[in-house]
Length: 299
Image (cartoon, rainbow, N blue to C red; front, side, top):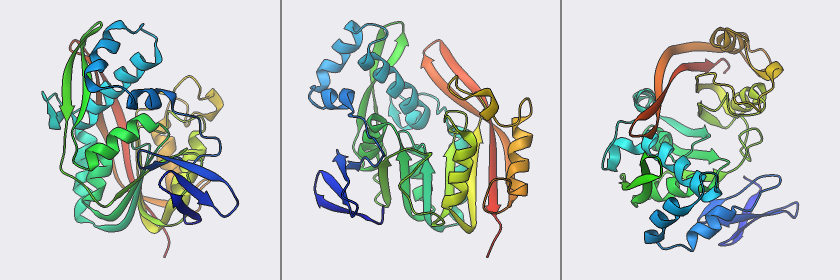
């Protein structure tokens, strides 16, 4: 992104001639960005229409799926700062990141930042943080929350029954958000002292490429923080899934040996943490997430 200049409020221009849109203050920097049609429609809707759309939309309607997705992840990331509050699904991961704030760094980045809670925790221990995600809808919520603005959403009770909820937090001013692909991020390599990717490794099509990206972004002597339950999504080919029936052991070995990476890593912290996703009042999916913090060897 060093080569991109803002020519107007709505466009980033590259020296090569390409133009990238800026939507709601968030640059979309991808090879072939798709129009966020749902987000465009949503911006035209008054807040009091949301509940009506939720009640009348078919189960598989794009807007309905967006409402469900936002409810699940806003609760998981911001449930403790919502009204009414719910249990914070990412509590264990939030605590781990918060503990690192005492070891302050200059620059940090989170790949797959979703609605921004981990970015907010990283900001307490860094001069500046970049949060990157491929979903503009979640980034828009993250941007408003990190600016200190309340974000309303529909929380599912059961079936098609929802109740209104609002999340809010203190403003954070040392964060930049970018809409982009974690497998090909528009970020400078070797530039970040702390690189984070939580519950992302098993969601991308090429997990080993994600590891290479994380390693490439990390400065020598910097640290990477990874977490995954290895709940491989169906689009991840069997051959690309790390470690067979022992993925945690294989991931640690890859880092220690530096296989396919620019340098070996020292494993500093490793744990199994709980990651809960609330679907409705009667259903919460609980994952056992493998957490690893490793320091990149180098000068």
